[in-house]
Image (cartoon, rainbow, N blue to C red; front, side, top):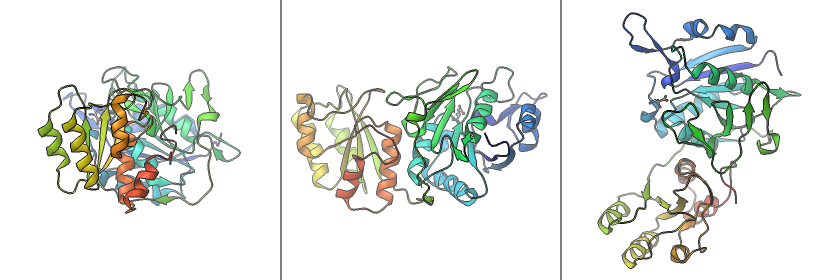
Length: 342
Ligand code: ASP
């Protein structure tokens, strides 16, 4: 463990940074100065902390690709100065931000740990204190000067998850996240147990930050009774380049003729269709059931066990790279940052 690790804490907004004004009871954002007041234990760390605050602070429901670019820039500009980064973020879209950062930060060799909380930092029962302190410990952890977690991860409720494998699945419990298709990277108890076999290894290449994201995409979540008009309308969206088809089970969809025709027309127009399961665990297997055979024939691309959050941001990233359609489709089926099991 580096006693002197230098950590940049990046505060984007969200519940974790809120404290309650004693007189008015209004929730206001925490400043770096009063961070030590709420977390005096920070003094015991002997790390060097610096703080970057976004203005305005965002409820993460207002997160956007433009904001992800700003966040990636902050990491890029400070990459050589700091050993690691802790990003304080609202929980609602944290899994999207973590996924986006994982694609944008190519050759990342330092920890970028996102955390937040379900209760504001200023509340007695807050989970923010524990999440924050665990994130700092994990971000700073190294062996022979090599960080133990050189990837984008989410630290929450005593667990460390690969960022692009997580989904927010509970709006109330302290355990707000799940990683249905990938084991946790670390468990926090009396000791922090790192599961090294699941953590990405550093490649020691130079960081490359991708700042072009193309959001001309959509998600089409299937449900029994989905109607032709709405599917047609969505697929007729001007400028649309790719659609995530959120399918049933192992990648299954209705076999009714109008549905397959509309999809075929979209593929013929050059729209990429990416098949991602609605289930929070398990994988898409096109051709396993009769109800997915036709999807394969039409040219729908299977997303294996990728999360929707990861699929959204991977598409934005790949489309932003300006690659030919065939190359985007090929890379959708390759695990670029450990986001899926191929
Ligand atoms: N709405 C908040 C946000 O995502 C919730 C949270 O922080 O947990 O910014």
